[in-house]
Length: 158
Image (cartoon, rainbow, N blue to C red; front, side, top):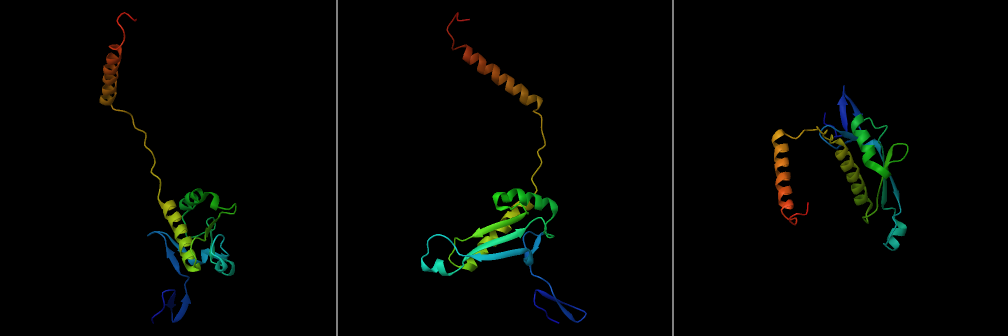
């Protein structure tokens, strides 16, 4: 039995599976977790702007998202900054394009890029000590510089 990509057959029954958005190889977000509302865009555009709701307000609840691992969600909330509400919802507004479709794509791409950035684990800094040879080179260099500067002074100035 052939099924569309968002459906699958189980014991002869066709069940609906919500489409997933692949963010990284290990992270996929359910489309139902993303909420879009359309509002009128501000700025220039004449009569068209006043008639059409082309701006997109995309909302993604980071705290309640089952798709994101806990460490990625925490980093995403830090990355979101002022776009994060007190309830843990990221709000992205896209209104640069004239068409609603292109604004939707832009807002979604911005969200996915933020999640991709949050998915990268920061490397922990391992403190190192300077080697004995590097300490010796530094001291020799300081001594050399000191003698050069001492040679510039007037005789009998000490």
